Length: 189
Image 1 (cartoon, rainbow, N blue to C red):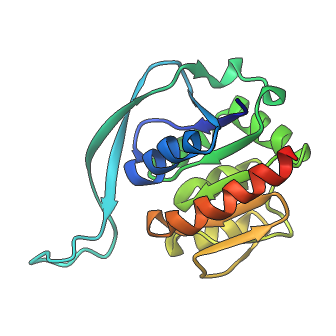
Image 2 (cartoon, rainbow, N blue to C red):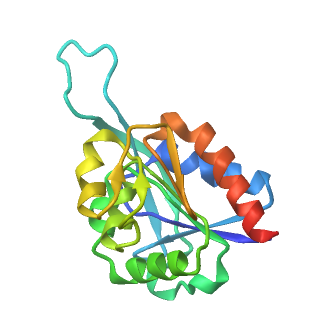
């Protein structure tokens, strides 16, 4: 069964993470969760409350489910994986400093393995310098991160540019996963 690497850390967004975590195995892919260390991580729910008596300008964060990383980034060998899925939440804000994760991301991109990225995950792609000259999408508040990484930001549900597919938020999970699975299957053929 081909393996898909899912890097994450504390404050990974629950729907960005768990939808692909369960969806990929339905099509015959094994998801391997990696983190700074092999341990249990906390997910969060990110959304702007729809009925708040005091409006929020940014997403509110609430605790979510737990998810276990079975391998640390330093122990990951990119050649063992058919692709990578980078979820969002606040985790990418600190994961983008992890040199092992950046090495893995660069190696997978150089090998043209399918990489899916949603929401704040673009911060990792920017830090790894793999989106320069590409067109991407992300949550609107990360548009500057994409542009600082040398990419052109567009506000669309998803963007496919070569072996990288990006989506704005978990609201775009359905189209993101449909297209990412097509990429994975074409890559395996």
